[in-house]
Amino acid sequence: MALATFSIWRGEAGQGKYCKYTTEFSEGMVVLDVIHKIQAEQANDMAVRWNCKAGKCGSCSAEINGMPKLMCMTRMNQLDLSKPVTIEPMKAFPSIKDLVTDVSWNFRVKKQIKKFKPRPPDAPDGSWRMSQEDVDRVQEFRKCIECFLCQDVCHVLREHQLHDEFVGPRYFVYIAALEMHPLDTEDRISELAKAKGIGYCNITKCCTKVCPESITITDNAIIPLKERVVDEFYDPLKRLFRMFRR
Amino acid sequence: MAQAAASSKRGFGQTERRDLWWVEPLAIAIGLSGFVIYATWAAFQGNNYHYGPYLSPFYSPEIFGDSPHSWFGPLPAWWPLWLPFSPALLILWAPGGFRFTCYYYRGSYYKALWADPPACGVGEPRAHYRGERKFPLIVQNIHRYFMYIAVLFLFILGYDVWKALWFTNPATGAVQFGMGVGTLVLAMNVSLLGGYTLSCHSMRHLLGGRHDEVNKALFGRGCYNCISGLNRHHMKWAWFSLFWVAFSDVYVRLCSMGVWSDRRFF
Ligand code: SF4
Ligand code: SF4
Ligand code: FES
Image (cartoon, rainbow over the protein chains, first blue to last red):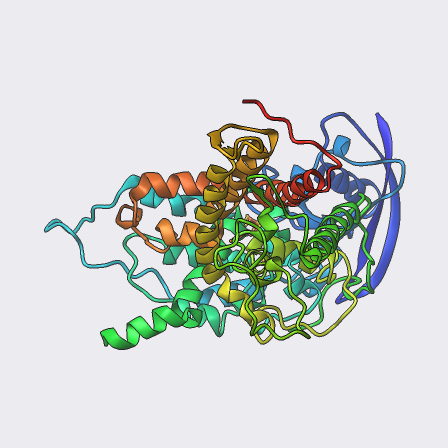
């Protein structure tokens, strides 16, 4: 058994302070285990959201020493324990209590994205034909567990609080999965440029860095979408070409 | 949006991060500004940019100029005297613009040189933010046009490598096939620039990314997959090619100044 000190943000609705807790931990423990131990032994009223403890439900998102991480996937031996470990709730969302934030804004954003609209079936039995490799490309985006760590680290939301004008990396991944789907016929490019605010992204790749599912958010979802937006709005030759075709 | 959590708004550089988050932006800032300073200096020199069959990539294509590489001979008489001239100034806007609008460089200089943000999860100096949504940065969307020009430059630089294989014998005046260290330096340069240009995100879009069914791509799925493979390492291509293009200029310059002597293999 070794000792660790955690400095945990405690409070409600944005008002609060950091409280220090020292506790023992054993080999193989993750941050969430230690949080649970502190909750059981020293702070029974501490709020923390979690569910699967296997990095698959996306509930235990928090900031560990300033970086957005899943608490259940951060091993104690990855941390420098010579100083207290700082644990804070995500900063891009309103605080509810202690480590729990209100992430419902994300679900509202998702509802406003145009749904999957497949082309008419290819075969009389109502089925479609598509190539495996085309589906593989969007498969990467479907690994998302909606932990919202990417939303949390993105400075457009975190620092500039542009939640009304920018949907955030998570939803660019979602839109990319629909938009690049070989069967989908819906057009989301114009709203991407306008209401979804893709132009606010300045390609800093912080979202890619924190994604626990290792989705290449910036290179494979956002930049390809930005390029499609250019096709539609900012490519003078393409515009000219479209004008003549009409 | 309602009030954000915890200790949300932080001042410039404030963070709970413990790692050396400032090392990467600092290294990028040094690398990029070092390159810009050297390239500007070299471009304004207007001399020592060719040696034997070698032409510095900063000066290629040489549209007007005094070297035997010049396309249309010396500087025309109508060039206004007050305007500084060097063959490099006529062309450097193209590769410069390509790199300036490159998705990789954008992401990195926004962080390293403009602190927007200084690093992931670190407080910013300015509250106001427009991103690439409005003028001036909306102009970055022109990137694909610079990419088309960059492809053209690859052919020109490739031709320079071909010319760097033909040496004039000073005694007899005869032209003979050969190869020197300089030939390899220029060949390496065009290969790295080739990797950088082919791995460009706009290239990936053009050659397949824009289709939902990649089979419909210009040169088929194989080509798209290959570009995607290169694209995964776009950052490395960007830095290696940046370093090497500057080194190629240094090499030709020092040979031409007589500081280094070019080694001929045959
Ligand atoms: S790459 Fe774009 S979406 Fe991702 S964190 Fe940076 S600004 Fe936000
Ligand atoms: S994209 Fe990655 S970081 Fe963002 S919500 Fe999905 S799993 Fe989490
Ligand atoms: S994205 Fe880097 S060169 Fe095009």
